[in-house]
Length: 465
Image (cartoon, rainbow, N blue to C red; front, side, top):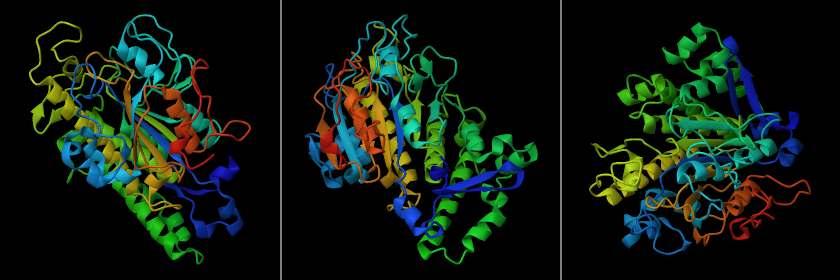
């Protein structure tokens, strides 16, 4: 733990406020820097209710036309320009698109509640009533946190959605049947990570109400660090960029009222409401990018919506019916109801909107400097996924996975592959191995998930062995 903590700076200021930022090369002994293990991070963003792809009678509206190399031009040319994944075309060279990933275990009672616990565990579920299944094993975010976090430090677990609902959080599991409670308030998460949660009320008010910067509470320490003679030009630039990014995150979190829309204010004061859900998603992405940039955590999950996402999204000024109803193509959570006109197109537009939110996270990662590469996205495996493959009939044999970032150079990107309905444990093994998780003998993680599944990693996506 001591070795890990020495890789970054932690400044503590007035009122217990803390500011962390990545290690600066010129402040570490050359030997220590040369031996440092590159920090790598993983974020898993889950959307629900399936996508519009060539399944269940739907047309293909999500994936590029053919697997193979990805470029910005190829993702925005011809029919590919009409596909939902074109929303991420700017990052084509840093993407891995993976179609047809199967969730192995049965879903006889409820596809939503029985698929969700499998997503990051690759384990069977306990069954039971339609909203009660629990995972039978640990999720991959916890496995990554155990390997890369300081001892005992849990992954970040977030949810944009209501606390009281039919199917609540179910993405992160610390062990068999041990669901990780998800934080619903981005502001609460930010205040805990900065130490503000335990600061005196007057200090909290200065930040939340008067928009004073955390940077201001450690001004003397910052002046001492920036004034060190050995600080290189690159490190001074990196420090300045990091402080700017911290301040930008604060303004987003505490809602600079001169700039913020009303929805952003409501997202802070009532984060579980329907109409602020997209803003809550963005604010959790802000917190995660900031925490990764500071080295405060190496793993995070964000569940968008409840298990059967009931959000009424407003897209291009139009308020949609409940998304779960759209995914059924009828005004109902069941199998009978009035048809929703143009439901396939509405679902496709929600898919595009979900990927626009994911692109926001990629933009935020790219805004932070990295000590090792151009920016923080180079150090990450940022993952977007859906626990179902389609609207009707809610199949989980063809779930979509999108990975962005190089994971410290461990991933081969710019690729679109067909997983051919093999199971999700192989994808999880690959992503965990990319961010540095190893077995006790030092080899790549290849046996995560239920022992009945065929193990292994996707070596074609890895540059490490």
